[in-house]
Image 1 (cartoon, rainbow over the protein chains, first blue to last red):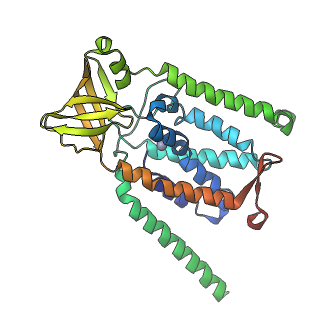
Image 2: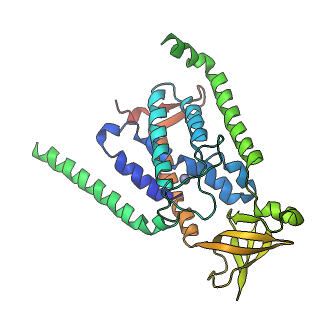
Image 3: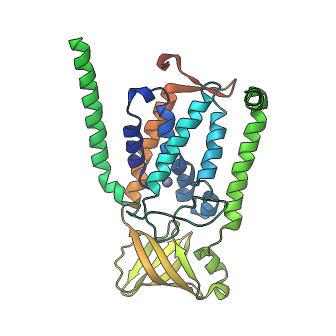
Length: 154
Length: 158
Ligand SMILES: [Zn+2]
């Protein structure tokens, strides 16, 4: 996994448009969900590692999304749609990593084959975190200033 | 439409939640039981059987001691000597290995990767979780009577 700052910054840029304002929080959540469900158990209790294998897989995440959506009475379809697209953005970034051990089991439980494009080691994006933070901050400041100027001039 | 309204209605909510929970639990158990690869812990519990087996080692393995021709790693409280000449590691670092297991408890490394910024990665990852969690609960609150998340009035966007 790239770090969650990288995942969140990607989600931020994909969802920055005002048209996504109402439901973008679900996309953000989806963008970090595979890691926040699997990694804490794996890191804090490595003896349970084999129990966490299923979690970071597409099928588990789809079922979890359906479960999570049950806790929303209205706009359930939007919850599902935004969460799934967020999860997709997460898996898309994960796909570009390389490992010397196995990668991710995309077709679990139907196949144990793992596949990755292998462009960077999982820790490499950590070096870029200051860049992501600066880019997000600069975008936010620019958009807010722009909004203020349009309000004043109109 | 009729099917959608009946199957996805609140009436069957309990059944759906139960089915999803069971499916998730089944997937977790399937992953545990049917994991097809040999792990270091399996080798250590049956060293005779796994002698000479090629394995991958990850899962929070850290370097404990460093020698001229190798190092010692610790995983799940068990220490294993790794022969790996010309590999530069430091005590406390996370490592991933592709290696051959030799009884009773040693490895010959074929490939070694040091995950140098792993600790930083873990700690940095906490902030987005807190931020997104705060944003979510700023937008929604959980109604304990209905067991539904509800959009907060103050931030309703229509
Ligand atoms: Zn991930």
